[in-house]
Length: 317
Length: 308
Image (cartoon, rainbow over all chains, first blue to last red; front, top):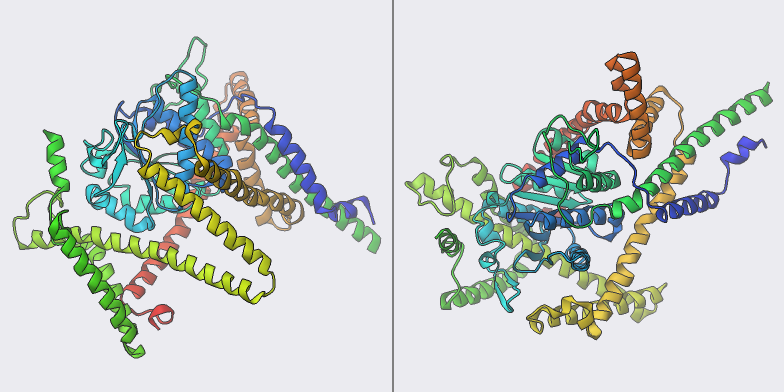
């Protein structure tokens, strides 16, 4: 048996150990890597930053911790963006009963982070609303598009003054009559719930998305057609957003050349307050390591196959 | 001023929606009694007629959605707040108002299905434990965890909902037993196990990349080259270094054609020219199939399943 034959039959546990060691090492070395953000990420960031302060945004959060490597980074970035822009938001899930609780945990953490930084802390019933889980995404999105006030009728929320009031009497929704009055809908998802939202609501409210790397390619046709205004895809999308939050678009900031350039837009500010580089920065090095490992595995596997075949042919002759 | 108009808009009564008050309670009681009577009646229906009941319900549940899409309506009409001017508009308004209750009924049904699933799960595992069937220990663990999570989750929700008007429980410093227990079970265990399960995919991907991704044909070579460009484009450090090199080359040679060889440009071209049209073509076929299947289900033409 040649060296290459042995390589072909290497114990898979060795591969697993290599993966664990390299990936875990990457997690402990966060590096700020310069990137060229994807056009879809730039569109996402520019769309959020263009919303006037104090407006209301819908957040459909359909992810759970099974995809937290990507989705939690997306959701944290979204919360930091909305809070730094002083936008009000309503969050709910139409895909997973666990999703609202996961989102609540993140909001609590981001609020704690802002409190520690001396920034304004978002309050339920005043700055945001938690509507929980809706069991049927198709019917929920259709109802929201037909009549938001009927779809969410008789729902109440706690308010900072104490007690509960109708959600349409809170500061968040008091001026919202139909879904089109919301300036944007963001879908944070790891599933096809984004497709359902686009099909039912894309002509009624501007939709943007923060999706996993697996879901992303399926949403790109809707981005190309203009039905989705911007998408942050996968871990690269998380880091892109953080990079854009830190550097803005076409902002020179005392340097000879802007860190992020874009012919489509004159300039988009960086975020005014709070943390920018976070989970994306922490995981992005690991993504590099994992991709290098993956590429090496494909190359080594194929080289091994060719060498084994050649050795077998020579043996046959 | 505007706010009061909006609040009034929410409180309009129509055929499908009654306002809170004494009348509403009577309607709820009537609905409940009708529902129970209907359920009882369904159990008495001969089996040869059951198919037609299901077909009928499916048809009438789908009808508002189809009519709302097809029924002509005035351009820019606010179907919830405008007053219809003639019979045609009145029908259009009523159809659109019907979408909300039908949607809510499907939401309730979906939630009811969750309950049926839980009931079935508990029944199956209780039977296994009672009979001490194979692996009954796992069933015991499931039932204990289920009971624990439900109890703790419910108590935590109850305290937050009814006994915490000022939101004190949002601060961990004010937590009691049920908040800590819920945090341990949900955040500390369930969520971590969820992540751990999903992370195992990484091991399979690496193993598959090493053992199964073989270049045996021209198609496989093209696919691998495309995948390589897209994967390299995900690595910001490499894309940035490569791009800077290309930009320097363009400055030196004065030939902007080289800009096409930046990794992100190549990846964008692959995505927008190859990947997106292919996905769109697949989606087109899938949605045509879904439309045909939807029509067959709606019109009761589909054989098998619940309507057989």
